[in-house]
Image (cartoon, rainbow, N blue to C red):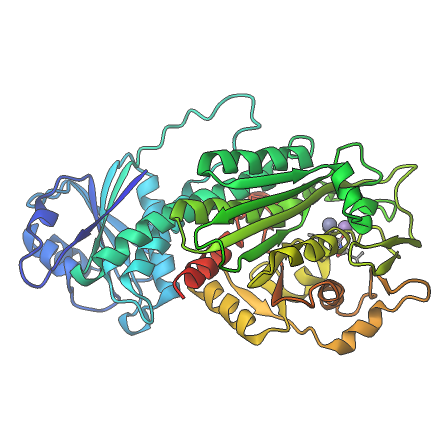
Length: 503
Ligand code: BES
Ligand code: MN
Ligand code: ZN
């Protein structure tokens, strides 16, 4: 799909080429119980008053999310008009805009329309600018069109009609809107990659497959990548990571992907992603029901790869390093057993009371490894705890940080990107739950506040840099009929890096 931007001044007759330009459909918004304004007023005039008649007759109430096609219109370059209800004008903000664009794309994707001129991006939205509207519209469209068919025996032959979209904007927003169009497409491409990786089964998306994907990204975008194997991981003394891979016949991989968009001297942002390509629980075996979903346990890793791909396509002026410890968590005769004690790369010893709390065991060594990059900040992303789903459900990712300013930045980015996160506590009081009689700490803290104690465990390995942890167990995928990976939190991370690059 091809996206472009065109500035248009509806008040001063500067809309000429916009009105006469050929397209299959022009999309315009209608507020509830309002007279027409801006694009709707001008287009109504040009096509002989059909819009006002339709609104007066009650066929388009302006209710949020409603749509109505006016076919065979004459007087403008477009052959159809799509009216989209926007709800109440004084309540028109981020949420209502999101609903309106989604409704518009759904209506259009149900037709053979190939070329669209889209004016909703030019509506005034509470607290958001024109470039935000463009980025959001593109991400909404790409979210609607994503399909995962690569594991079906027959290729997907349903051709998509929609090809070209021209977004209108105010002249003052034109430059930023063009950047936003590029960013929207890049973030969508990153999300598609993240979703594909999450949706691929564990027998395809192995640690080796994730490493090959990182290498492909490096080749395509001219980035530096290092992939360490079993021997090198042993040499680094990552005893905790190695204890998780022990029962698996798939070789573990430790992936380090470097994006350099700023001066080599600028401290990088390090993203660390949990890459368990299948989590059976190990000897602390999970129940069978729904265990297939544990193929998604590499979505943290997938979101790191998707975000770095997006950042590279956007060409952000920031340095980013992605670190991915990846392996399977399997039961076996030689697997790690409950009660085993392992030595982490940091030197701290851990009593593995439950082999199903494996994410923290691979992440802690990756977090220690991150120190060598003298990072400006480290954010780890992990499908870490079922408890996070109990606490927050599927809307908010769990955010943990002792650094208020880093947490604030991530929350701002999550709001702007419509990829919400909610901050949970990380007080030292919870550390007591990780006490072990035999080692420096235990890998579980009991049932109370399970997500908090998991984050507390990680915090013991992140004392030398600003750090935040995102628990995406509830947000990285959907269960039920629409089962599949969501591509979250690539929008949040991308926005965070866009904001950092602008500092
Ligand atoms: N990968 C799981 C967490 C998870 C559960 C993600 C459900 C998505 C959906 C993680 O490795 C795990 O098993 N965590 C345990 C920790 C417990 C043993 C302390 C959990 O959440 O039950
Ligand atoms: Mn587990
Ligand atoms: Zn897991």
